[in-house]
Image (cartoon, rainbow, N blue to C red; front, top):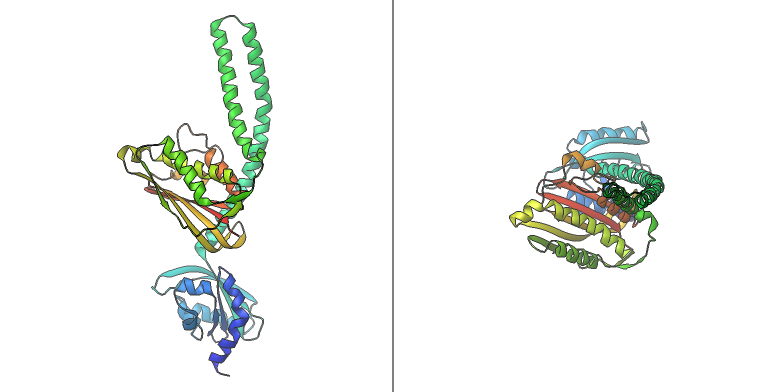
Length: 359
């Protein structure tokens, strides 16, 4: 049987691999490509027709490593092999990947799965953030309840004391106690708010959310702040809590506006809303065919290096006088929509990206 016919006959069996975001190639034991999925086509910048029938080793920076791995599989030295390598893209750019080579269902076929290392790093970071967010949630809830009870007693005792004393100076002291107790009570209520408020689900248009946030921010910062829109109007409505998403976006944008103080003084402060559809993405350990991608981008000084890895932790703030709750609450609301928030920040450009699954 001619190899071309064999490849053509094999292709329909592997078409389900096109649904995966990982890069998949099915090769024969002589290294010839029997099938390449759509993700691999996109990554390499080469068509499936060109790849099928070619030597797959030519797609790697060090072809002999793949050849050695295939020889080991052919001699049954292992069932599955993992190693790191560099894929060559059509523009000669090298892409670091983790290669997993396993024997296929049929004799003489090998399945090669390649995960971009930056994607693996991102997934590991997401898992850590998810675990940390859950731990933060429990800590906040427990701490808030522990603070709330004695606060009521302190405030009540101060009120009773104020009724008994006659000295104006002593009354001022009791008023300070009452005022500070009220301030802490407000902080505790904000900590508990996401866990108390019911999740109200309805149809959400992300661009209506952005427009609402834009109007609120421009009302607070009416001068010297420009807000750009870069919308993909084809994004469909989805089921979600509109008010929660408004609050999450508002918290991010409000932080950005405050961080732009120097840019606003210079007259070139800018925030950009950008929406896109992401296809075949993995986050929160789940694969999604489609996801909403909302970017909030500003041209401010960037997130300080000292808190970059902790910006979503409660009570961590890069601004004097900040409560450090805005991003924590934003993360909580987005996670309640099975989504994630990511931040990429360098001086002059900070990009907060919200990912939420679409139907």
